[in-house]
Length: 95
View 1: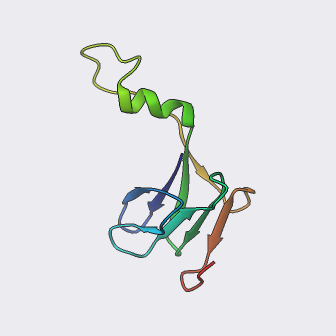
View 2: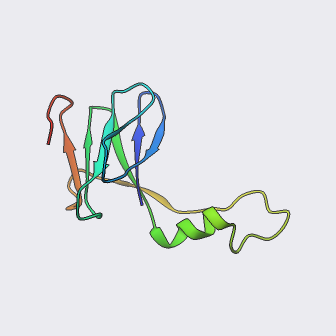
């Protein structure tokens, strides 16, 4: 799963394929490419984040979480511009 982090407003937005999503302040936008693996992000403050897909069901469904536990810890990583599945664009460009 890929997320868009705006370093300006600190908003985090989940990416989807069917629309370009924006952060709260509007300076960073992003979307998945049609292949469902690669992502495009726009804006000088845009940072692409990755969350391992196998962790999502545990977070959503509470699987593996003992009663009384306060937090579920997951690994989140920044995806750099040189990653083959990350496409960083200038703010004004469309694709």
